[in-house]
Length: 204
Image: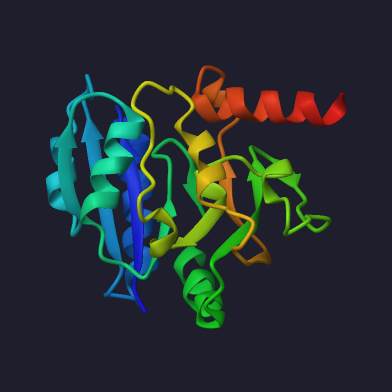
């Protein structure tokens, strides 16, 4: 099977280069992996992206626009999303390819917010959005996005995930930390705001 990794890129050139280096390392055992990078209106010089073995596209500014473009061209059986200002484990693709052999509709994994471990072990697989609202926390069957695209006028594009994780889908928990979200370094980011909204709601 084949995994498509979708990464919108907006500025943060140094972090993006490091993340792509890690992805190239992860891909070494899975050459079929499709890495789609969509640069969307960066102010920084991102010409280094052309050095990598990736599917590179450009579009106007907007993370939803970038994700939609990638969804239109991706060819993988499964799709996963990465934000270019975060970090992944060196075994990221190893674990994904191991688990998709079960052919679940989607997978959700453990992760870190900076140095804090966000334990998902008590996750209700029938209500995953109560624990994880960010796209980067999942791997999806491509077919789940048939007819689903992100709203360009919604700054919190991740919310569209509710249209993907429908009640008739089945998911599995990967009990291994796969992702590190840069919480403190991204105080103004979309995921940061979503995280605050979700956790505030869960405490009310």
